Length: 135
Image 1 (tube, rainbow, N blue to C red):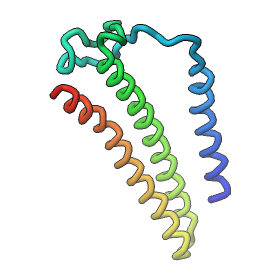
Image 2 (tube, rainbow, N blue to C red):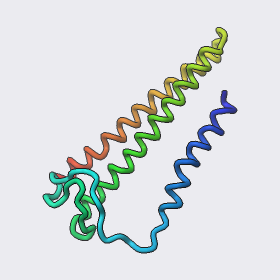
Image 3 (cartoon, rainbow, N blue to C red):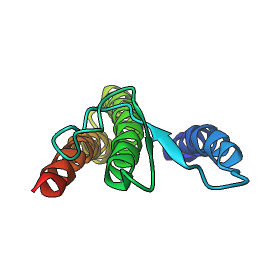
């Protein structure tokens, strides 16, 4: 099962990182950003769907970027956790009573639970930053 995990994770990461790396080629710095989230508690001019100047409302643009990044981290970690749960279940089902394989399968599921915990923390970080910025 370990021989299968590394190629699967490599393919997943390559599929996620390559499009981002290709689209990250910017020729000049942007002057505005379009907000996907509501940040009126930080700045009255920053609400969802509004295009704001980075020079005037930089904190809202920064928070918008943090929210977007943590959304992607959350999606990736939840997907990986699902894969690890399935892998752990397959190892447990095919263990045939072997204690080492049972432990390995349970470890996969434990790692998935830890990954989900980290994913939920990634969703909480922007809220904490937003609270700190609003103070």
